[in-house]
Length: 143
Image 1 (tube, rainbow, N blue to C red):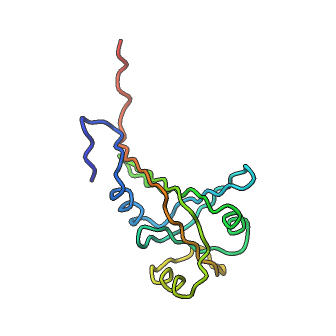
Image 2: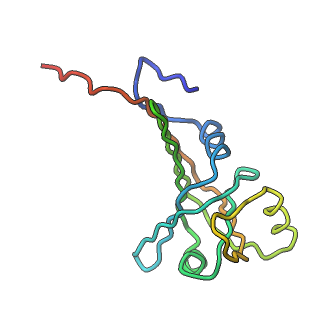
């Protein structure tokens, strides 16, 4: 899937490659920070127009991202012989306009657990970085 130069086990991905990976999975982690304390939440999400969308209920996650909209989002995938990780820095906002909510709903975002999640959150990216890893044995040490 990815071409590593000179058998380098680590490949830095460009923006397009990173977004393609995000579009192909539905679970990640949201990091929010308030008062110098960070929290991390597992979330399911959808991608639309190079933005991340998720649903949530009232609670710490929603409260914290409304206090400090600067968030991190991370998703990854692990297979038998390779893995990848994408980290996105962005700004979160709770969607309030019916047109914005309808657009988010059209992405087919499904919740994991059967609880009411009435709030849609959009994460506008500021930066994105991704890496792809090929697994293997440790190389011999140079003497």
